Each structure stands twice: as C-alpha cells, then as structure tokens.
Amino acid sequence: MRELIAGDGGSVLVAGAMTPGAVALACEGLAAPTITPSGLPVFPIDALPEETDAEVVRLVACEEKTKSTVRSWSDARGIGVVVEPGHRFARPDGVRVVAVSAASTGSGKTALTRRVARILLRSGVKVVVARHPIANLLLWGRFDTHVVRSPSELTTPRPLEEREEIAPIVGAGVSVVTGLDPQHVAEVAAREVGEGGVVVWDGGGAATPWIETDLDLVAVDLLRLPPADAAERLRSADAIVLTKADSAPADRTHNIESWVRDHNPDPTVILADLSVGVSAGNVLADRRVVLVEDWPSLVLGGLAAGAGSVAARRFRCGVVDPRPFAVGAIAQLLQQHDHIRGVIPSLGRTEEELADLAASVQQTPGDAVLWASNADPAGVIPAERRPIVRAFGELTEVAGPPLQDVLAPLLPGHA
Image (cartoon, helix red, strand yellow):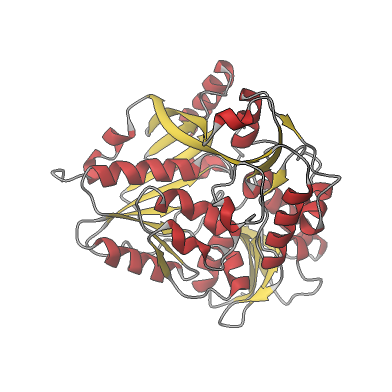
C-alpha cells in the first residue's frame, strides 16, 4: 500500500523510516513543505497537498486538532485512515531505558524529564537524554545526529523549539542526543552512557516511545481532561505523573485520577506540583510586561496561558496586549488562534520566524520582558535593552511515591 504518514513530526519521521511504501509525510507544527534526505516530500498538516497518489493515510501519535484536520482532508478525497500506535526499535545492548512522555503538549513533560535525569545523575548513574526527532530540523539542513553537552552549544543555528526542549536538560548537567534518525540517536545515546548506563527517552507532544523501555512514565495535565485516545498510551505506562496539582481544583484532580485508574489500575500514580519560579521577581512587581510563552503549548496543546501568566499574576503585572504591535508570522499566528490573548508565542521554526519574534517583542511597549520560554533569550532577542525576567516550571512530587523510589530499580545495587 502507498501510504501518506501523518501526525506528530518526530513520530512521522520514525514511521517513515520504517515504511518502504511511504509516498509522503505530513508533520504537525512543520513551518514549510520540504523533503527528507531520501527525497520523500514532507508537508505541514495545515498545507496538505491537493493531489496525492497515496492509497491510505496512516495516522500516528499527535494532538486532537491534528487528527481532525487529517481526517477531514482524507474524507474529502475518499482516502481511508488507519490509526497506528507506532513501532519500537530494540533497546541497545547493555543500557537501560526510561521513557518520559505526555498525554498532551504542555503537560510539564520537559520538567519531568529534567527531574528524572537529575535524580539518576545524583544517584551515581551515567545518564543521557535521547530526544524525540523535531521535524523542523529538516528546514535547517540538520540531518546528522548531535550530542549537546552545554548550553553554549545551543547558540548554533537550530529551531527555537529544539532549544526549548534541550536547554533545561543540559542546564542540569545532562547531555542530550538529538537528530532526525531515531535509531542512530538511540545508538549514539547508548555509546555515550556505556555499559550499565541509563538512556532517558524524551518525547514530544503526545508522542509514544519508539524504543523498548525498562520504565515508562507519562505526564498528565490536571488542568485539562486527557484526550480520549490517551487511554491507550496510559495502558502501557508503569507510572503516571499528574502534574500542576498546585493549580488544579481538588474535584478535577479526583476526577482525572479516577479516569486514569479506570484505564490502567496497575501503575504507580504520583501527584506533582509544577511550581513556577522567576529569575528576578523584584523587577516584576507592579510593572507592565511583555509576556513570551511556549509556542507548542499554546498552539499545539491549545493552552491559553503558561508559566509566564502564573508569574505575571503573582507579581501583579500588567501584561501588554502584543496584537497591535506584532509583525510577520507572530501577527499571523495571533490572528489564527484567538484563544491566545496578551502573550507572544515563542515561534521560531525558521530564521524568518525568529526575526519576527524578536521584532514583535521589541515593538511591544512595556517596562520589562517576562520570558517563559525555556530557550535562552540572549540568543533570540540580543538587542533587547529592557530587563528580561525568566519564568520556569519545576516539578516536585507531593503525593504518592517519590520518583527516587520509582527509579530505584535502575540505580546501582539493584537487579
């Protein structure tokens, strides 16, 4: 069968690498049409081709909005859709693998990955993070596998979303292996840690692991009901981390925990706060701020606010509406997504979008910039002269077993 494979960018690239009958790929969040090194055409989900010789669409892990768009496009052309849970590569010899993923984008998955990696590192385990492929690397010609060991290496040309995913990890002293070839990423990660080490697979959005695991952790956002198809993902989990407990009403927490246990009564369930910290709170108090929030959480995850909005409320900030001042891709994005109010999404999939982001921030009036993207603002808005205050989320377990106990079988001295 000739297949068009659609869904989360990294999951699509994994499926495409394993499918001899693929005729095209369609990736969630991709900035522009492009091709893979093998010559396979790749389309953004919102720019699918009018004509195709595909006989079937294979839908892999992705967000609900993506599923709806792909199904509408397929129905209009009389093409059947097959939902594919995804395949897994064999675990590299001699290492153990922890998978960290989420039911939906913006659930605190990166904070969970950082917490897991730091626990392993402090326990004397050699650890490295293997990052889920990011489709926009295709637009930057970054086809090779790279090991990022320090924050300074993130200043090299790369999409902003990759900087956001990697910066918190390398900032904690843990190397990250990134690239477009998932099997090679896993092999390089295994070589980095060596015999007895641990590879932490770091997912993206609602992606499922593409490597066999020893321990499977899934983050679920207590502020949003999990999508219906998240049940399948939760059934394979060894531990489920319910995040943002500090912000969620008690009845919602109870209802989501009950829903989780109805679909998988066996795994460990951990309740965790995703507390928001800032780099310089004294700068923010009662000031007018330009607020920059994480783009994937706002657009792909459908959130209206993030860590920056929490910090702005805490310090009684007046948030300046950026819509009259935004330019280029940022202005277009704000017009397309009217649920995003008062914030600038950290869009930077291409050099042009990065320039539009910088211009939109600089042209929006305010006393300070409240930067809630994980990427280093110095590499994005270097000309900004106002104070820049960073907002970030830290995950802390508050009920259920601590992650240290969950990870104990992977630590030295355990079988």
